[in-house]
Structure formats: structure tokens, C-alpha cells
Image (cartoon, rainbow, N blue to C red; front, side, top):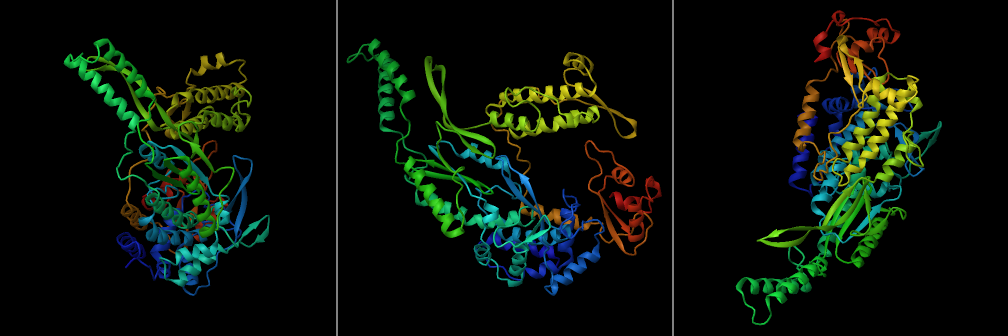
Length: 616
């Protein structure tokens, strides 16, 4: 049985029996097809041509490397190299460590990830959305939008330095609940304890998972799945009230009954106790009260939960005491069971109706509702609608601050300014760069209830783009530029085969609010993932003959970082690879060396020995 078929079988068993304990996992990494699929899945990923401490990249990778890796795994001599660490700036001014592992070792990490995903993914919580197939920021925000109505309090939680604070012993203890294969566990130990190199100095890693590692997000989700399960217990423990909805308050019912009786008396012409004018006045007063009286009674509690990586929120339908209890319980559980602590500066209790919570860059608040005037059965009426529904908004201030930090506008009044570092590019490249920024913001916040406020963002980027073009062409004023390029900054670009295309600044037709427009994509099942694995395996170029000379001797894969990149011109042999739209091709060692020496620069597609194999 192929390795990937066995991995799929493991996924099916664990889906049917969540308590299943898995054995014989290590030998799956000794299957050639497992590592071939791992290579195919990650060969085109960004960063795989970035060398680690060994100086190696995926360029020159071949089946011999897979066989060599399998041999080392078989005799357990395989070791992970220290990750080359670099520090990435964060929005709060601090830095985040990013580890860069040698790309060839990433293939083994991807194999480990495939196995762990088969075991744990079928039983992960539906409330967890980070680093999972078919899930992301928009699925998490959509869940809040669709299921958090009626929330009274929100507990915002953030785990302090989560990836750096994961306790290795606790993680291995969690893994051993479902894995009974010490060789596989030992390999994960090697991943965790590989260490890192910073400025040429080796550092041991006694805790934490390396950020940038392929297997790290999966291990992080396994670690926090314990917290997910605990919150699920709290949902049942702290729930009050047997009904599916909170019962109406006594004041609301009493007012509703008075209103009903007054209307009935007018309809039947019963004015024995009160005159018609008195009944009309009663109806008017009851309608005013109905808007302000709480519709639901207290004492009915429900808890909801959402998590994306180490950011999480708990929704409370109840009083503040329950919210404080949840925050305290979460802090205790994380500290005692997972050896983690909450970030005090990012963990808050928010009143859902009057305060704004932030999650995944989005402002969240419960609506106070709005009054709607209308005619009900021939009688003028005022109705309150939308009370307690989640309202998701763009944090415009934060977005403008980000634009200022990146040089698109001034920080004081957010006035657009040109970007010097882009003005030496082609006109169409400048417009495309600005389009990428605006489309990214616009598409991410397509669901926002205040989408219309992104007019300001569009104005800044549109005029910053215009000013950049103005500076490039030494035009004295924007009106001159707009007369030449038009309002949409239309530029011409000569594409393939000399065909002229136009590029223009992206301006949406309207900023109409579409609160249910989440970009979640088409749902895929885990079975679809294994279909992809099979497809990648059957279409793999590993082991094929050299596409240049046709030789089958010592064939390896020639890799390039990219075949087209905005603002950069493709040169040499990469021009041919751009023509066939491939970042990797099989080449014998002799031809591969000639490629790097430039001997094949200018070669045509017709001169290749295998035109179809490289392009298929």
C-alpha cells in the first residue's frame, strides 16, 4: 500500500473513532511516495529557494536525495539542522523570530505534518480556524457574524509569546495520548530541539516551536486543542436555562399584554372602561416603552467561543460576573495545564453593546438595533430590529496608520504622498503595486458594515499613485497627470507576443455594504486533499529524463525563485521557463551546470529534447 493511501486510511479511522491510538507511523516516512508528495506540495512555495544554515536550497533536488533521506530515517541517523533565525518587525514595535530551515529538511517536516493532520484534523474543534484546511480569517469572522447574536460580554484573549512558550514535555504528553510510536515521537523531539542560529551563534531550544517551520502550526493547534476541549466543557457547565432562546422579560410581556388589550378594545369597539382616546394614548405610551424595555429576562446563560492560532474570544450571554469567571478560569487552565500565560495588555473584558472588541484586525460590537417606521395592518407602527446582532467594521484609524507607516500618506492629516522607491518602475508596474495594496484591504474588509469609509483609503492610494507617476515624469501638477492618464490612471503594457494591454487603478463600482460577503472559497473535504496528493504524485517530474538533452543519467531538478515578478525582468534561461510557466524542470547534472554557467541563455523552446514533459 502506498504511503499516502495508508495516511488516508489513518484519517478515516480517527474520524470514526476519536479515541483511536495510532501506531506504525514512522514507517510511513520511509515510503518514497510520501516524501515525493511532500516535495511536490512545497516545491513552489515562497522561501524554498532561501537557504538555511547548510547553504542548500531545493535547486538540484532529485530522487537520490529522497533515497538518501529514507536511508537516514531508516537507521535513525537523520538530524534536523538549526534554523537560521531572523527577526521580523511587529505592528507594536516589537519583533517576531522567524526560523528558516534548510528546504530539504522541510520535506521531512511536511511528511510529519501530513501524518499529524490525518490523526488530529478530523477531531479538531469547529471553533478553531487558524492554519487549517478550508479555514481562515473569514471563516472565523463569518462564524461570529452568524452565531454570536445576543452577546452581552466578550472576553478577548491573547496568549503571551505563545509559539516561544510551548512546553515540550507537555506537548509530547499530549501527542502520546493518540500516538503509540516512539520512533515518530523521537523524530518530533528532534524537530523541537534542533535549535537555531542567530548571527552565526548556535542557541539551544528548550521550549517553543520554531516559527517558520512547516510542522509548527500543526503542533500549535494540537497543543491548544486541549484548551478548545476545556472551553467546550465550560459551555455545558455554565449554561443556564433549558430553552433554546432566552425567555422574554416580565416587563416586556406585561407591556405587550397591555398593548394587545388596548388594540383589541379599539378593534371591537369596547369603550366601557376607557374611551377610544384613552386607549389610543395607552397604545402610544406602550410603543414608546417597548423600544426601551429589555426584551429578554436575565438568568439565561450561554457561552460561545472562537480561536485563530493564539488569539481567541469567548462570547457571554449573561452577566459580567460570568465573563470575569471565564477569564479567570482560562488563565488558570492555561497556566496549570499548558504552562502558558495570558498577555495582560491584550486580554480584556468588553461590554458587547458599548465597547469594541478587536479580532483578526476587525472591530466587533453588538448592534443596539434601529427603529423602523412602517404600517402594520393599516396602523402606523415603530419596530425595533437588529438588536444584539454582531456588527463587524473596518478599524479605519488603524488602516490609515498602517498606510502612513508604509509611506503612502502623512501621519498627521493622512494626506497622500508619493513613494520614491516605486517611481523608477514602469508606469503599469506602479499602478499594479497600488492595486495590490488597495485590493488586499478592500477584499479583506468586503463584509464590513462601514465599507463606505474605505473611500478615504481609496482616495489616499489613488492620489499617492498619481503623485508617484507625477514625480516620475516631472509633471508640475496632478491635473496635468489626470488629463494624460484619466481619472483611473490608465497605463499601457506590452504583453506576450507584442500584444498591448491596459492597466488601470482599481475603483469599485460602489461601496455598498454587504455584511454577508465573506471570501471563504469553495468547501473542500479531507478526501479532496488526498485527491490532490495523488494528482501531485502522478504528475511529478522527479526521475524524468533531462528536458534539454534527453539523458536519464543523474537527473535533478533545476529550481528558480520565480519566473515572473512585478518590477523585475526575467533574464537568461529563466526566460524559457517563464515561457512554459514552470519554476522547476528536470535536467541532468551536465546540463544543470551549463544552465548556471549561462551556456543555455537564449535557447528556444524548439531546442528542448522534451517539450511536452516540461510543460505538462
